[in-house]
Image 1 (cartoon, rainbow over the protein chains, first blue to last red):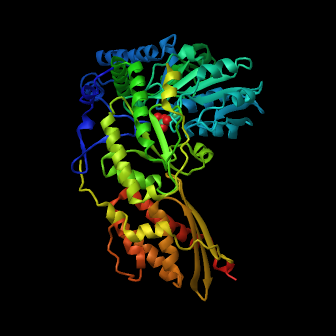
Image 2 (image 1 turned 90 degrees about the vertical axis):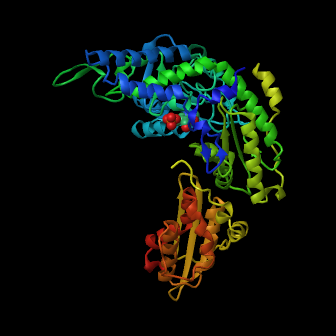
Image 3 (image 1 turned 180 degrees about the horizontal axis):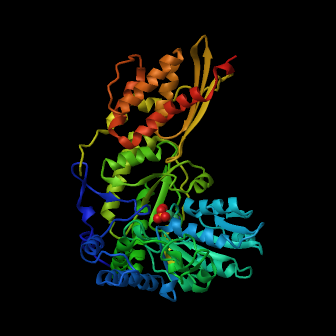
Length: 425
Length: 152
Ligand SMILES: Cc1ncc(COP(=O)(O)O)c(C=O)c1O
């Protein structure tokens, strides 16, 4: 395993104090992660030394910027093990990648076609499909989750029919932390051949992913959730699929030839990258990938399992909490009818602890869980058990304030994580 | 602007606030509703419903119901408590008072604000100001959305 204390020194923000003297305990990593110094320096280095627009110039700066930018495609290719760097498209974020797919795949859908989502999707994997439904007369169905907060695979297989053209599913829920078995979905539905899109916003940053092994057609994720800058997203797609679908946005870069009456599209991946891209941030994202690979994504995953287990054990001391986690890794969401998530978040913030309160952009899931809002703590490899202790103490303070301990005990619905870990091996 | 002096929690969670949160006023449904609105805070999912019954130009009864944090529930409860017996003009002034308070603005134009003063500390917690204002903006919506004609 790695040395957490050493790793923490790579992140300047982890040295800052909250309020006057409280060390920052950042447990909102599912929203966005902190940036190591190397990534910040890589941004500065680009702007100070080779800032230029890419692909168009013949001068030295343009050539340097272009080659470093294009090199990041290789890094992404190696990170997720896709076949070719032309299968890597840069967007603004996961959300834009899904909008691109909804737009471009949507073109060939017909009335009555179906799209299958799940009850645990982030809004960004719901709204683009609703927008598409407004344009095309298609139907959207949701695969339910079980009472153990897992995807109901049997129901999923029953919901897939000849009409199902697309399945778009999150790899890891940003609320439940559960990692969905994509391989099971792709093999279980192969008879009907729907396209499979995987929202990997919460998985690629935390575990080793192999695009080919997953058996999906498209994979989407965001740089900012994996130590990279904001403003960069990725869409990985099989080349033959990407070549078949029309472009999303039009403009410079995505065309080969333009006349007074028409245009021909550029090759993939540039066909999907209209206009000047986010050069600086893509380059710094490349640095983030290098950084993560140096630490090792397997190590990160293992360490997060350990942190999760530790935190769940500590949280189980609060037997009045409902914890929405049975096999989730790195993300723990909970609620209690007496103290509202906002109040919890405000009180723990006083102790320097940053957690999320609200619906986490998953309102349909919240309604399925029967709550309007929950509190969420989410970890990354720079978090420590000591920080979890601070978090638990801060929670205790919140519960004391609202006299929660005195309330009716809630049955805690989670299976023992020890058995989960065994299964993981 | 790295650190700011820490506001004290008991400025936010005054005992009066916690009491209103635990036992909110105005939960009894009205037999006749003259003004009504529902407000939500899309960011956090807080919800509040406000209903008003008017008699002789005064607010006779107030109904509030909601799901949310202690601040929004308490604020709704205080609303139900203090608007009873007020004219609509007086009620609007009280709403204005709270908004000014949250913006650190002076407001000496009404003194009969009862427990509402206990919400003053919320202004030191900028992200929670919306929680305190939700019932009041919903109340203002109710007044705007309904015509006087509806009153029987
Ligand atoms: C599972 C999941 N999908 C999609 C997104 C959207 O990511 P972004 O805001 O970077 O587009 C998020 C992030 O909040 C997420 O957790």
